[in-house]
Length: 426
Image (cartoon, rainbow, N blue to C red):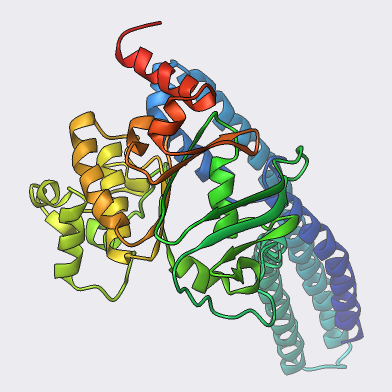
């Protein structure tokens, strides 16, 4: 029995050393791709190629995509091979140590039996105990194999799960009490990390129920203006208020519940049309959903589909055209019916005829709401109460279309450029 104890001690000592190497290898296995520490690089590579299959075909880069995929697989294969070799060594040592243990035990048992020191029953007892111990060690090794695999995955995921979001509600944050929808920027300064300041001592007031359009060159700060109100970023200096309540001092949930947003890039859930529209207000009835769809000009199209509102739109809404996706997003905003409305190029993917139809619906949606609309097509903003012209984080012009187009400035340049394009001028 002392021999058994000795072999078990040696096995456990060696196993402890080998376990550390296996766990290190498992962690490296999960970090095989230097660009990402996610354990799904291969699947992500395939999904990315499929989602961008049109671009791959148009540029004839099938060979390039295959090469990138094989490179990712190669890294994973090398890491997998190292991990499996570590498992093999563990099983090999344990397997042969068992054979050696049984052989040595059997030798001494036969020797003692010949000297009449033990009986046949003693031999059976010792060999049975040996087998039980080895079965336990084998079971332990199998669990170790599974544990090391999961250990690598957990070690890879923990940094993501334990990351604290930068934008947090304050401990004493209150619910936003929306009264009229007045939005005020008070000496706001903001810059993206690692970049020059975009807004410096920026101040502007948007009155309750005012319809405001934002225009300007790309990178002028229009989208950032909206994102700061939504508190997707925190200002570096100054504050933003809604009805004299600082947005950083109210809960993010209550803030965003009061705002409907129609984004420029209309991405949908991989679900039905019904599920995507009802996301605007989960307690809605089917009648309310259909009414919102009619206002957005998408109901008639939905009714032509085989499953109608039960039609699955595919990942990111890939089964629908850009205009159809955008109208579903607009229907969602109609359903939410929040008192503040942000429109980021709401008709950018629609044809001119459909755009006019949607604009009529949007004007209904804007009624009695504080509305901010970003548009590169100035024709979208002709009926706004006010237009703010952005340039490099500053409002360089402020007024109605008729006023701005009659003055020299960036707005007139943008207007003339678009009119020139429409008239076929260079």
